[in-house]
Image 1 (cartoon, one colour):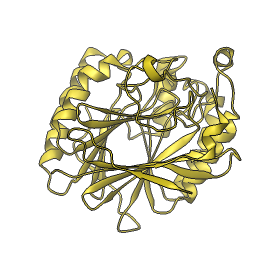
Image 2: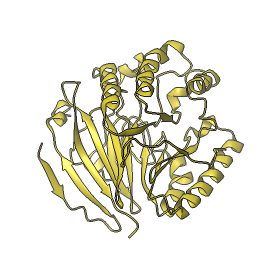
Image 3: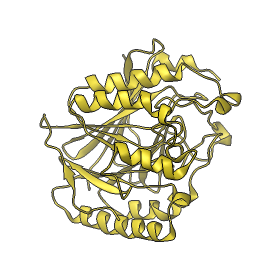
Image 4: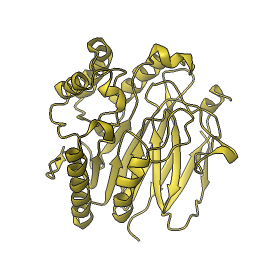
Length: 330
């Protein structure tokens, strides 16, 4: 694989952009506890994996969007994650299943999660909108039956020098008290992490992204208003991850990096491009849709290194198609 090495010069951007343009792009033309949870890594430099939107397509969705062997793609992603070297934890940014209240909808995902856990990889999820479908109380109960430690649904984990803060962006599913409690917790926790000398990087994750060029879902103005200002104030907050939009996107806004990683198997979303785009997408493959994928993250010295692993047309293998190294506190 040939990788183009380009310097990426943006004001206050402290990262080197490495871009791999692969044949895969030709497939598509047009209150939480402030106590941290730490798993001792098997290697000196543990790898964190992130995925989102692994739900199977709903019939009604296929009236608008085309299928692309979606269930096969999700199976390939979970299989690849089991065999990835050095993965210390898997973070799921929501829409684990298509309808959280449907027992049969969980069967396939339960099998995948069992394989992940059998491999010694703990799973840290945050709920997406589909995880509350169709009956919110039953959906929440099913979610907590599988992830009983995820209540409240906002929390922080520590792996090595990286802290991952997960937040519930389903604001309409939270009471006013819960929304206020989550906000206070987030501001307090991020401030504490910023002062912690053992933390080098903070990753913030929500289901709904603050920025996206998806033509199917809107960017979350609530996330923009509630979470982004706190993220921007924290010097150690390096990257903001979101799902919900079924594509990969990379934005550099207000001097920081925002990624959309919603390529876990849901129906792929067309994106606004060129002059129609809401925000400038730094991903170099200017395709209308982006292939299924997951994200790997590790601390390399003072840099937080991110690598996008995208599914190849054979629906079995993956290639690293995009890498970002976000620098330290200069």
